[in-house]
Image 1: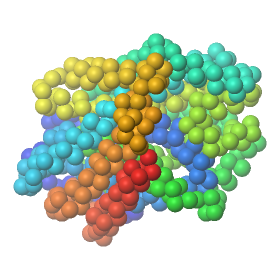
Image 2: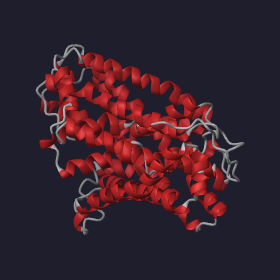
Image 3: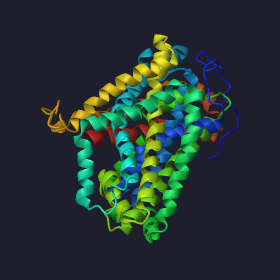
Image 4: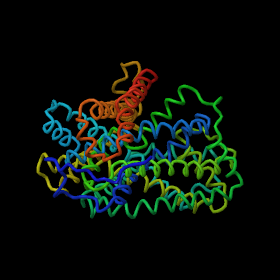
Length: 469
């Protein structure tokens, strides 16, 4: 995709001048990629690919990243930079400048709240990864049967105090970084964590190449067999492409508000999409050779990472070492995403309540941590408690399940849909042209996509998630 080098020309009232800014385009790319690269890439992408037949699913996923994910990401970053404030206040500021109904700030609020709720249970899952580093390093997987590995995971979930300890540690790591601000906290953390994540991933891929099944794994990922692709699989690919880029949760608006005016939104967004997709594919190349070499099932579902792979690590030479590296990799991926989920609410508290960065991070982090306790208890002591069980589609869903359901199936697609509508139909074309600084043909391509194709696609996922729930 060819884009213009011309910088944005508008110095708006909501400008981010005087606020903390990313030091460079590369810093923004690392931060945005750190947000996008998370458990969705390392944990979810391999198993949904396995469940949906491999190569054909991957091809549809790549097309959806280009046609759906990229346009919305550009729109979110554009809104954040144009408003120059937190997601809620950026939309409020743009509405004020352009005479738009200020109620559109609710789009930012939906994203901020969704990200906050997601972090509350995401931190619990991040805690599982922290726990598994110790399990792998101490050789607890070595020589164990599938039943023993399953029991290890079940025992972890059944122990609320152990889960609370790991959840607390993970949340403390997130708060520590966010409290330090844009350059000293977010930028410094991702400049260390993201290169480390890439190196760890490459190390695991290198090990996977020695299993004798790397060619089979590559064929599984990159040779499409459309007979294995269902309509449901296409919609799963579309939904995963949307969610893996951290869209609909106000993160890219928050990060965009720190983006200097002379940096191309289009080029940085394209880079983030390419790197995020590359990490997902590398995760597949790291995991599937190990799965095939041990006679395991690639469509093992959510248990692939925490039950299936530990079994494989326990049977292979140097399994403790590479199992430890793998779960450290998982922690880094979860940590960078967790940082991005907390940032929007902290930015809003600083602006709206006049709180300093440290107090905002500690306060928001504490509330999020406390909410996470409900998710922990729903895995054991409250496992039989279904708060909304009287609703047919929510029957049997615990607090953990409900948080996951409402954020993933309702709040994120709704937020993404409203962002596309706002950028495509409400915000002035002139303002968007100034921010994107694209050549006329490229801007028109983006504009048509975000006006017509993206809303229909995201709306379809939204309806499918509700009907198919």
